[in-house]
Length: 134
Length: 111
Image (cartoon, rainbow over all chains, first blue to last red; front, side):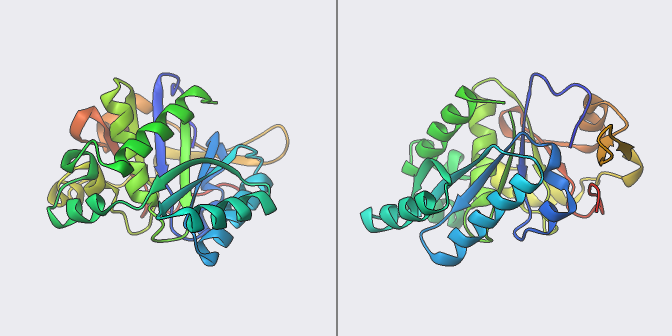
């Protein structure tokens, strides 16, 4: 997606669950892909395929962000997978029950508790993305 | 930044997209959140009421055109400038975030 004057604007695209959009070229003009990755095989495999497809589309800048990480076992599973497939792990979002509570309360995570561990982790992700924006 | 969040269903794409958009907006950035899912639900995570989200207009296809590139590939570009698109087709959300829904539009690049 390209528009004439995106310079001072941040664009965040929530992609489709499958890889359909990617293969149709939707993401072609985004400068960076963030692949969400959970500590179980099918999720990690999809993240790997996202990275491979993005590379085919000429988007070299793909980073992985782990989510719902509960413990060192989860952390290691993801780190090992990323290392084995040359995926750059750029952030970690912990499992956070506040997100479930927010949903039950009908609120967004940031409105429910801006200091919850997951929201704080997404703030750090924003720092990382802003620091190296392309 | 222009960032796409991708990954397996259920891994938190929408939660991360929506919260990231709100975080950046609270820092004073102009943020456009784009829902490219065919079953759009980013609105709720941004804090835009469902009823308001349902009234949003999808982006019409004639707003976009394919352009031939020098290397022979094509790309899909908006024919209007982004301010025009945003003011006509996006919904306002908390902290000044704008939401654009593309999910039901049959768009794509070459292929």
